[in-house]
Length: 322
Image 1 (cartoon, rainbow, N blue to C red):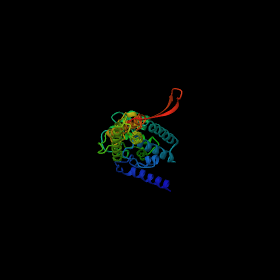
Image 2 (cartoon, rainbow, N blue to C red):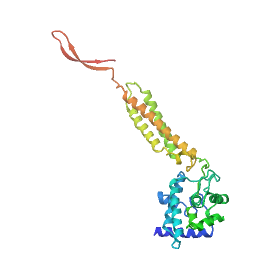
Image 3 (cartoon, rainbow, N blue to C red):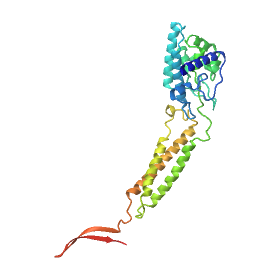
């Protein structure tokens, strides 16, 4: 039932797109189906720090799947073949993951036909591959940041008629892109992680100081050493588990898809501090544990003694130093 409802909703959206452009929500990756592709792939809505390329890829995979399932029955053999070829091109495009950037609208999601670096959007790529790059450039010159439904250039209309796709289906394909240089987040590191790291770091500073003060102190116990090993190891694990993964595209576009590049760097810095502080505490505590001297070390000695002479023999010697 849910699948039928979703298909009906999509059909209504496609029909509405042909009549009137729909308002674009700032947090949606597509004007017609929103984040449905990402939800289908991940099981939940995208979060603030979700990588934008992952959102676009999930949407394009979803759009491809929908369009392959809904091939119009009245298409000629030539148009049906053309449609299949375009969907094959679309598949290769989203797998490659080389998407344009919305450089000119910070804080907004916008489609971008061709960006300043020459990267094409999904529909722009299909146009360039089948009609030539100059045709895509002409469309971009008139409608770089527009929705497909708003584009009125003859070059696009001619291409759509020969594609085996409708304009509404092209609108279903068209993603929007977040800004690669968003406004700096007021809280680049999650509060819970920042507070937890600060508290744990303070505890480990005290344990490290306690262990340092106990070096070669025979009257010192082992409690601080054991606690330091456990607490230091825990802080190392905390930092390692929360260490952000590498930025998308091998770092070619630093910070893209995250709240800001600075937030990525800030969380990574906190994670490295946790790893470093935890390692220092654990190492210092372990060293103290290995070199711990019992309180009576060097004061009490028990040994076997041999007595010379005719009445000699063997006995135990007990020595106590004060």
